Length: 447
Image (cartoon, rainbow, N blue to C red; front, side, top):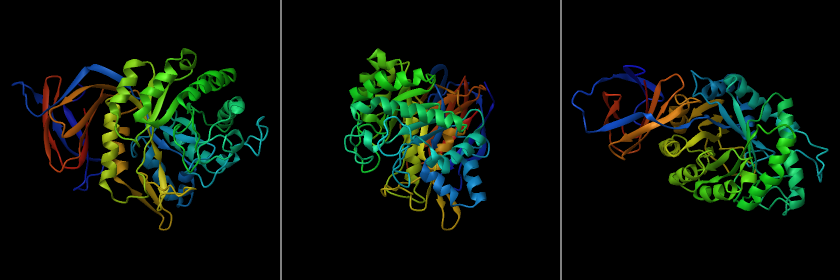
């Protein structure tokens, strides 16, 4: 056993507890083989290894941060990336060219330029790259960045614009793959290694903002015939490639199309997904059961519809989705924007959303939403390299997941979304520890 004392970290709606360490628990022998109200931990049953937790470093986040005072800026960086005083993010996402959370459409080339002669990342160097570097410096050597495009340059698309869907023209597939290569190389020259890329953000969505449609066959063929070979030829075969980057309801079908083609599958590390169409946790297990060597990566989720100051439901939405994904083989998790302004932007088409941290640029104030604390119950205590272990619970009124970190310690997360306090007894290696979790609360047990 790693410890006879159990640390209890709690966030609860009706208290002041926000990632607060409360009264510890002590193990006692299970002399009478208790049967009722148990949460069992099966440490010999091992599942997936965790790559990391994090959020998106967007132009909107960079612009918002820059409008705050230096002290408030540093507070936000520390809150997310400091391993002890913050919630320990290590894995971040960014965008290739513009996304909706940019201040406007932009591409890395000018006009019609299939040779990419005008390629440059000057727009990123003005805002996004400084933010990425601050995050990387705060994390240290374990920092990882993956990037997703929202749209190719307008001239490469069937609709002639970056917004409103459209498709990549077949004659520009090679040029688009080469732009990925140039992007990775340019970031490397700027001191930032790109760990992974996805082919297309939300490959099935025609949005009023930056977007591009790929069928499952088109996406698979692009990786097989263009992106994979281009990365390999440039000596970038180590950069991981992911597909889909959209909701879970089609994750199995998209995986099947790509992974059944071995010539494409050899280039694809995994499949990433969002939460906007519902839980579909079983779909993740279906992918893992059929393709156990491919990784499952949650790449985006947010509370839509602008800022929801003080909403507790937002945090519970995060907690529920993270636990469901983890218990169905997810190995990596990234939130959407790490910080937005008081309006839930900037966003160049008015698609305002909430973020775990709101930077009030008018009052130079930092506001932490419930989602920040709920995410922290996972990201701060389930560290890169942790392995999920087996667990069971006596009731579905709360949700649980359990992990063993690389130092041999355990982290068990318990989520209660009900209106009632719920009792439980942790059962681990023939030892017991009784406790309860308040209504609308989340706990992380550490031992």
